[in-house]
Length: 442
Image 1 (spheres, rainbow, N blue to C red):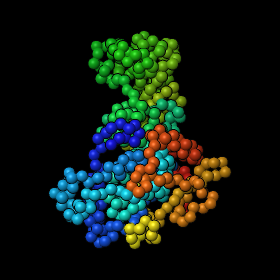
Image 2: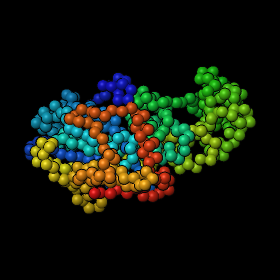
Image 3: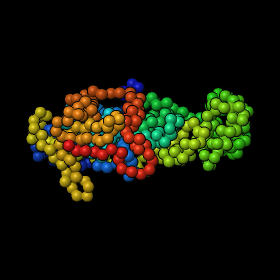
Image 4: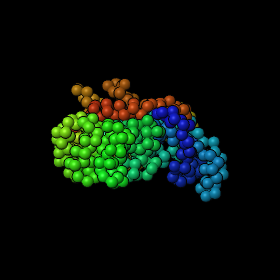
């Protein structure tokens, strides 16, 4: 198996058990009832955006494709299901030969979405589609939440550098996925080497307070780091006295010192003082990096500070207060046979409490105003209106079980920058509000 972005060899285990048990018990019942082969259409969407968010960001699509490709019930997995009496032998026989042979359409990674947007559409037999529900939602809900937080932080940063550094604040595997999603959302680099290896994201990192405390003096620590990493390194200057540390840093590295990092205190005040001190010492090109529990609001509050880059950890990898997008995966249409060209009947959940869904296989397009900015997300089940033709958002990702759309991660990142720029300007406001454009069902 190779990674989609770099072609690097990795050992990818089966994703088949990233599945809730009821997916397999539904499969068993459908096999027994004779409905497992019925052609079905499932869609992933969200009924609402997290409170206060103006738009969502599609992220994780490439990881979904990997998960579908590796959704295999190998002997070890089948043995577990048999030993635990999860499903019967007929179902185990069916699972042993499982390969997804249907079609998947979706919003391309990096695109923005809104309530009701059909972010992913999965078509095939009921049996083949239903077992993918949990792993698809697990990936899309996590990665899209991180990408949305990253996008807000990127907008708040106003072009200044952004470093993802949340690996120590989340599960080790989630950290890799979070770094990938953050890159899609606008971050420039990561501290996580596994993310750099797997996805080709630029990696950065120099030293922590422990390195300074290891040495007999701060001067000794700075000298050792400069001797090892060169004058372009970043020196951490808030272990003891910031003013003294900056002076020592420039004495050792000279005016070509790459950067200093500030990790505590009143970042706005300290950054101004450090910039003035660096300039007075002749280190006019030395950059200032700030860290310390930043989120999009803290980044925005530092807009007037002489800061060159922000390092963000906890708030990023937890979605800045919204660690999930509440996406769901619902059957929206089904046939009476396995024939994919046969007539489909729209089906929909009609629950109370705002959990109803809209039936039918859907298309989506974004209507623009006279100035070229998005003014509505239009979702429909019939023919695409003439004025929206050519503006459809869904692209084919899988055809007949074969992945047909693979792209570098940079393509998703660039797409997001363009998609966000195409929204009304109020999309990047951090004040609470409704989705920046409405969703219209036609």
